[in-house]
Image 1 (spheres, rainbow, N blue to C red):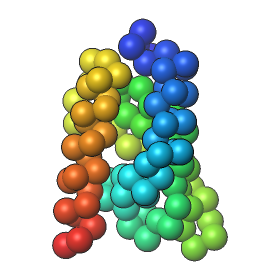
Image 2: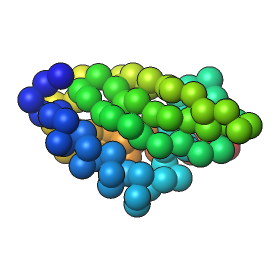
Image 3: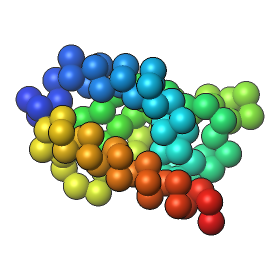
Length: 95
């Protein structure tokens, strides 16, 4: 794990996303994993290469790894990438 994504930074990002943007985590699961029928999801960790989620669908919970399309440089890059993925995910889940 790179210095930019220490356990503390990963924890801070996950806490923010899960508390303030829970709907976005479900969109990540639905659009970027095989769990298009995800009902809830939680971001467990994030690093420069991707994010780990816990995804619930039909009363079962699954671990999911979603890789980013590039290696993140820092927390700001993570912020912008996650925003872009939500926008892309919304388009995918609507079609």
